[in-house]
Amino acid sequence: MRQRVVVDPEHAPLAANGDNDMGTRNEELPLRPSMRAISYEDLINFDEMAYRHYGWWNYGRKTMRDINDDIIAPYCKREKRPYAQKYNQNGLKVGAFVTHCWDEPFADFVHSIQSVFYSWPNKPALWICSFALTQEQHCLKIELGHSIPDSPFVQADNS
Image 1: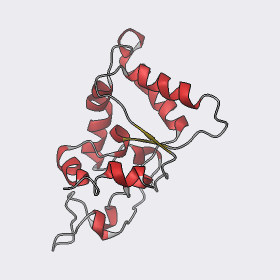
Image 2: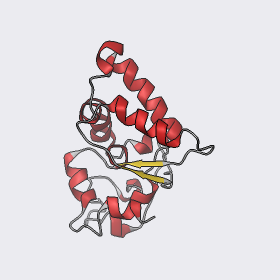
Image 3: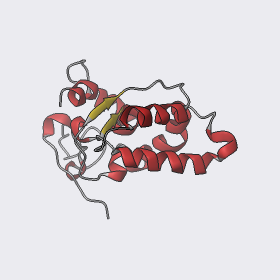
Image 4: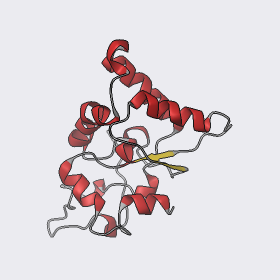
């Protein structure tokens, strides 16, 4: 059974029936954006899983968009929560804010992360939007908010 996390209501307004805008009960509210990081080690483990998923002959051609469509989004749609919470149900505070291009090869993205943090003895927790946002259309629309200051990108980057 997965653990329930409650955050302050301003990040997930409740309807009169007790449901939030993401279609879940209030005891299932999403984590604040600043708590949606994944560990460096979890990213490396995810990369290894993606390699096995696609096979060595196909993995190198897969983009972040492919990874999202084939692995991340189906999980988010089923669970109604960000993929980062699969690894850290109670959340993990952002240590580094990482951007990516949707059409870059995923292997290149992971290699870039490995190169940047190679010499760091303590690897930071990584906020990567494809993992930190619930990649499901209705949830994503709500999470993105109505203004730039309210967006999860700004909230995570300011933490």
